[in-house]
Amino acid sequence: MRTIMIVEDEPAISRVLSAYIKKAGYDYVIYTRGDEAIQQFGVVQPDLILLDVMLPGMNGWEVLREVRRRNTCPVIMLTARGDIGDRLAGLNSGADDYMMKPFEPEEVVARINAVLRRPSQALIADHQKHYGSLRLDYKSRSIYLNGASLSLTPKDLAVLLFLAEHPNQIFNREQLIERVWGMDYDGSDRAVDQAIKRLRQALLNMPPEEGEIRTLRGTGYQFYAKQNA
Image 1 (cartoon, rainbow, N blue to C red):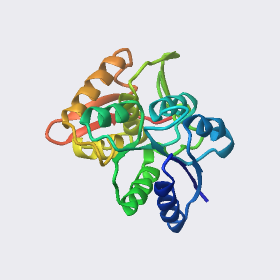
Image 2 (cartoon, rainbow, N blue to C red):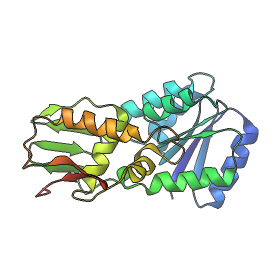
Image 3 (spheres, rainbow, N blue to C red):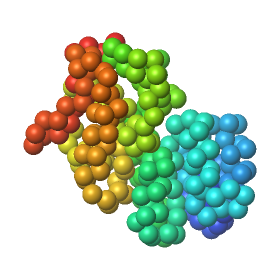
C-alpha cells in the first residue's frame, strides 16, 4: 500500500485529509513540524508528500529543498497564499503540484492520483536510459553528457526526463504542461518553448544521430532517437 506523508500543522485539515486519503486506499502518516517530517523521511519513505508551506521548525520551502536533495519523491504543496509568484516559485523549486487553501479534499485525492500516475515519476527497469553519449538516471534525476553532469533547472530536467522516457513520441505544449508543470499551472504555455530552447543549448555537444529534441511545426515536440539502449 502506498504511503502519503501529510505535513500540516492544522489538526482539522490533517484529520479531513487523512480520512479521504484512507478512503482512497492509501496509508498515511501525519507530521506537524517540518523538521520532524525530514527526520522521519528516510524511515517512512513516503510515495508522496502533502506539504504545507507555513510550518514550525522548517517551513515548506526548506522541507522541499531537503527532499529534492535526497530523492524524487513527489510533493504537492498546500498553502493559503494565492499569489501567482508563490505558486510559480513552488513549481519551479521542484514541487509536482500546488494547491491553495481552502480546497476540497476530493480534489486533493484526485491530484494525488494524477501525480502518482505520471510516467515521469515511474522508475524504469534499472532506472537509467542511454542515448549514445547521453545518460539519464531516473532514480537520482541526474543527466550526464559525455560523462559530465548537466546542470538543469528542476522543470527543464523534468521536461527532458519525460521526453526521453517516450522517445519519438510527439507532445504538444498542453500535454507537456499537464504532465510536467501540473494541472494547477496557469502561467504562459511559452514556458514550454523556453524550456526546450534551454535544453537544446544544454545538449549542444550531443551528436544529432544519437538523439535530439525536435520541433514539429504545428504539432509539438519530441525526443528523436534512432536507438534506445
